[in-house]
Length: 301
Length: 226
Image (cartoon, rainbow over all chains, first blue to last red):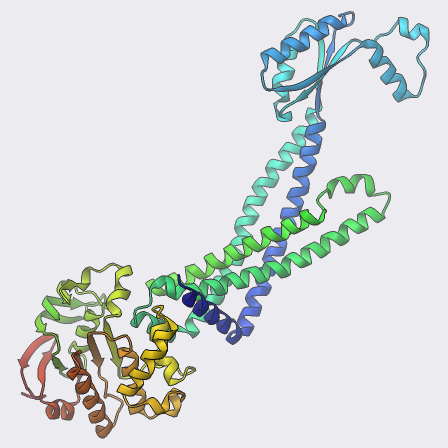
């Protein structure tokens, strides 16, 4: 496409937008509403994914040895697990019975006396950090096989719940992206159809004098992209303003802080800029596809 | 230049517009297609610029069967065929020179070339002095001349005219025909579909008469009722 053609398409698209001002405002407003909801869901899902990542990275498998099993055997068990499950275990740490006792006493705020040290009821244990936390079940099964192991614990309940929530988020998200995307796309598509109707004489002449179909489509596609991007800019701005205010409110209320701050971990300038950028790209794509469909339908009718 | 080989055309609603047409139009010819309304004149022209496809037969333009062109190849054909209509089909919000230049804009013609060609086309149709006027400021005859300038600005070797004088008074119609004859003298093949008896008789050119979608008569230097 030559510079001359690009100039022509751009001028045509801008002239259309100016001529059909009210229709353009309606398309931009509707796209903004759709993209706002889409963006709100995106931020929610992103927060959930971050929380899942954080919880997963903190999830360890704890292997408690039978009482009386010496630390050397705990070390041998850990070595054996690492060899049996290559690429699954990132690292492990042997916790001696003495270390376990001092941790328990510390958490209870007491000092262990000599008697308690001698009659220490706690076994040696292994703390295992995984490469991929979702593979904890393999480690639990493998460790449980050992005669020297008494009990295996993983933070599986929390992790499983979060993973289920994440899966649900993906399913709901896909449905929402589809529905809201279709709504934005159809809104823009309908606006472009009205523009096409208003300009059908011009299009007929273009076809008559030998304009290619891609040439005829170009200004309408640009116009649709403009509607999408403008809608995303407006919807994104409202979303970011609302979200920043929500975070400010949460951080100002000390009683809610520990719980909600973890839920709203997305919040840096780069996070919000990325979110806005994604919405702009989505808006441009919905606008381009919507208008392309309308013009193609007209040209092939 | 243009050949119809055993061409028939039936529309989806079942109306048969053309039946077994065999017709050859040579390069540089001036041909009238005559006959009452609904006899297939416009349909015959539409086949040449591929607005319609024949149900049967071949339509050859410069040796190429246009009925077999893909959708993507149609624009190239249309750049070699200028078309004018009874209702002029001008864009009311553009000036005369913008209307003519529009035909060049949409085929990606460079600006410098456009600034050279548009005044030349307007000069040919005698409207240089109206370049900045809008269509609604012109008479019917002037509007038709703008549409001729637009059809010719790309120098097509073929000019098709579908009832070009249908909306004009007899005197203006004669002026338009004189203009088409002048264009024909410069080498452009001109095909005019009309039921304007006076014009056809006065011009004394080849006349192809259509009746019920078939060629009833084809005469050199004919007349409307020959």
